[in-house]
Length: 351
Image (cartoon, rainbow, N blue to C red):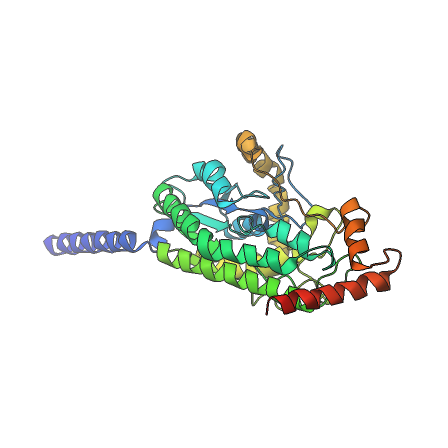
C-alpha cells in the first residue's frame, strides 16, 4: 500500500509539473475550454457571403464565415465580435471586452482597413485618367510598413493580457486578383492588380511578424486561394458586386473551402463532422449568435462600415477629367484607350 501511495504521489507531482510547463509555454493545454472569441474586420465577419445574422448592427456577420464554421465543426462556444469596417482601434475599443481569462481560443484578422482597403480598391477600379491607383497603393504600403506594426504590437499585447490562456490565431488576407479584369464596369490594369496583390503580401508579412513576436499563430490563406481569385473560373472572391458592399470579399466558398480549411487546423482540435454537417450546424446557430451580438450592438454601431464605390463616369469630376484627357464618354473604346495611355504615363512617372 505504501508503494502504491508513493507511485500515486509521484504521478501527481509529474502531472502538476507537466501542467506548469504547459502553462508557461502557452501550449494547447492552456486552451482546454470551449470559449472562442472571433475578433477583427469584414474578412472575419463574413462580408461577401450575402447572408447575415440580424443583430441590429452593420457588422454583416455571417453563419457562413469561417469563425462560425470553425466553431460548429469543433464544438466551440462562439462569441462573434468581428465587424465590417473594423480597424485596430475599433477592435481595441469595441471587441476586446469579450476576452477573459477563460477564453480558450481567439481568431483575428485586422489591418486592411487601417491601410485604407476600401478606398484603395475604389480608386484603382476607376480609369487611370480619373484616378491615381499607384499613389493610393504607395500610401497604403507606407501605413502597412511604418504605422501598422506598432498598432498590431500594442493590440496583440492587449489580447494576451485579457486572454492569457487563449490560443490566438492571427489570420491573413488572400490575393484578390489574377492579372485580368473581366468586369465591364472596372478598369484594373494587370500591373495595378499585381501591385495590389503585392500589397496583400506585404500586409501578411508585417502581420505575421507581429504575430510571431507575440507568440501567436499565423494562418496565411494566400496559397489556398490561388486559382480562385476574382475572374478565375471558380471564384472564391467577389469582383464588383451588387450590392456593392459584397465586392472584393470572400464568398461562401471562400470561407468554407478557403479560410475554414486554413484556420481550423490551427485550433489543435479534431472533428468528425462533414462539411455539410458543419454548415447545417452553423446555420442553426444564427439565432443564438444574433442574440449574443445584440449585447454589444451600441458599441458596434460606432464602427464605420467599409465604403466601396463603383466607378461613376457621370459625375462632374469624371466629366471634367474626361475633357482634360480628351475622352469621349459615349465611347467605351475611347475610355479604354485613354485608360491604357494614362496607366503607362503614371508608371513611367514612377520610374
